[in-house]
Amino acid sequence: MKARQLMIVLVLVAAAPQISAAQTVDTCAGEGPNPSQTTLVSHLSGRSPVGDTIRLVNRYTDSLRSAAASYLQTTLRRVGDEAERHAYRRHGSWGRWLWGKPYEGTNVYATIPATIETNEYVVLGAHYDSIVSEMPSDPTEAKMPGANDNASGVALVYRVARELRRMRPRTKNIMVVLFDQEEQGRIGSRAFAEN
Image (cartoon, rainbow, N blue to C red; front, side, top):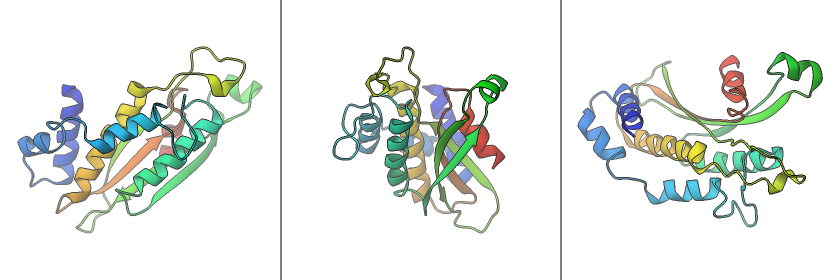
């Protein structure tokens, strides 16, 4: 927990240097989860449906990762100017390139612009996919909701982004990125960095 609080302090102080470290921790980390964080984890862990009927029992299969990306894009619209998708196709390892189909996924990102003109960015990121240790014959039945790995990380990044959105002045642009396929070898973040 202390590492997460330290990350929050460093990110917030870098983006809004006039705020003291003590104020930053009180603002974000000291209050505990707020209702939007709890709701986000509830949706991403499959406890409550995304939309009318889809439950994210895992975020491993293509269809459920796509549903998670749509939900997260809508969620990020609340903190950034625009929430966008970054679709990618990567071969990953040599074995995957030679014998299998490439990885295809979608990162979701939004930018919170600085209040002072700058070309500098601070990136806040977390991955939204989960992994399945044993795949049943019907992949949609694979139960691996990943509340702690990494729905809680997504909720933390979302909370920090909301706080940063309210801070004035912001001397850096904030890019909030939710990565896909990190459990399979950091595929999404590598694709995002290369783009």
